[in-house]
Image 1 (cartoon, one colour):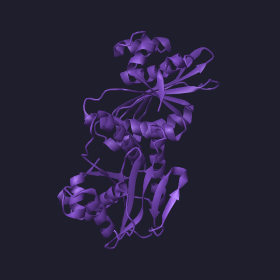
Image 2 (cartoon, chains in turn brown, red; image 1 turned 90 degrees about the vertical axis):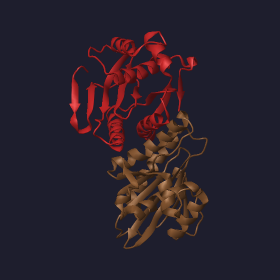
Image 3 (cartoon, one colour; image 1 turned 30 degrees about the vertical axis):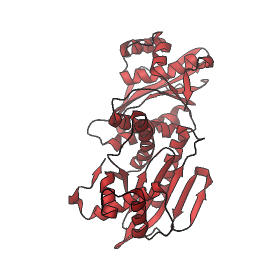
Length: 189
Length: 189
């Protein structure tokens, strides 16, 4: 898990653990954006949560919008084929500064959501405040605090990029609230 | 071309012509929206433009957002496999009432764009006003006027849904302006 592998073909940075057998289920958290889509796959085995892979689909400024969307789809399809997630979690009720930004964010989300939906994966949204609350105990926690708690709760030694931490936090929140559906934390979309 | 085939599996309404051989190239116009994504494929043979297929990916209100996105991706992938378009055209600079609407529209566009980009198809945007101007000679033309001219220019006898007419108009505009690149009508994205 600690080894970071660079895969130049898809400009993807990845941390991964090949021992994916006998988990009770695999959840993928996704934090989509055009230039840096974070993802994190977390499995539960017994009472333990275990990180299978995390990383960022990095799309340099020199890439066109559609090249980025293709990279997001391609990477998520590869992750689905490798790790067989059954549940995906995205941020809900997030903010966009304006219509133009919302459109670009929407396109990145659409590229990711359509791959997971075509694979028959259940997709949920969780509000950012709920994620912060579940992970840090404080709904107004800042990004570094979320990243620190994600590393601690998932026993990761490496520093995490903000989009990776957010994606892992989404998967973690799903598992943490999984046994308490009455909290109404997530919404299937 | 005049026969309309209903394909219940994907809730797609389609008009198609199986004689797709020996075209100089195939252009797909796409007018994405969550509940009714229009598409139209137009080939040029010699000086003639020829409609290969057009239709709407219809997603009933009972379908979830992600089921709709999967249907958009699946349908476009099938069209790519059947008709091998080399160029795709979308509307650019379109309006959204608010951030929420832009996000939903963006998701539908992302689902469509990522499939076409993964297939290596060149993707262009054309401003709606340019499309109206190219098809009707008037940049402020209304939707019925655009649909009438699309039917006339492409020799279609059947009435067209608004999203189908818009998609065919995009493909038509690409061909009409193809020989005049100095007009700067379309922008590769």
